[in-house]
Length: 124
Length: 157
Image (tube, rainbow over all chains, first blue to last red; front, side, top):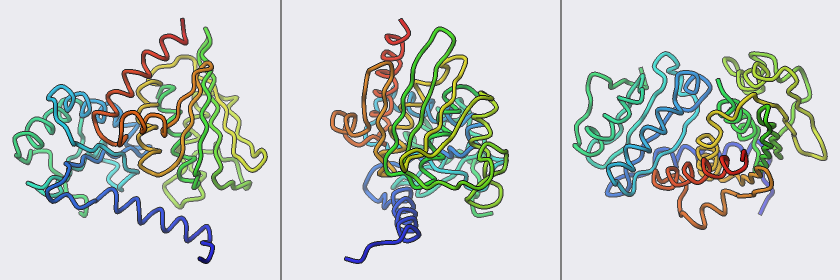
């Protein structure tokens, strides 16, 4: 097998990271992605992520994946949280503080309702 | 920004340099904590990496190491035997335990080995994965946070 160049290795890593971040969720785990770039950290993303983890633990939920993503280009909306679930597909929320983080677990993940007031469009 | 935030920026910097192996050493003192992050990622010798906005990864980047420098003016980064070594000190260890749990999860997700040594106690992402399974599970992150907080308390005492 030919040796990969550094650029090829980087491209491979980027593809694998993208694949893991947006894995096929049909019938599988719920996946929560928290933006943890520098802008996210400055906006309080660590508190957001830890609040999500605490609420998932408190509610005894199993099989929820929580990963961290770099800056997604929506710095004015940080901390940004994306939720991928079989029931609701991919939904993004902006300015997620500790309170909204718990609400996302309770309303979106458990009750299956999108929190429209805080939903954002990452493609806009 | 606290010690945990600076450490997160430092390790993220290593990951973005393409590191496949990161070693993290923390020494807790009465006056704070000394941290050393060593990795096998790429090294760019041009310019001062602690300068705000300095980045090898395009425009709008390059804040991480400037944040480390803002917490410790004596922070240092050098290349040694093919590895990049970053050292800095923080006045307290606020956020350290919680950040370490997130870093184990992050490195595991990226497929990068992370070895941590705190006051002689050693652990790796591989060790945790062996005990807890997938480190991106919320349950695993929660367990790591609890263990690391207890471990850091023991070291301080």
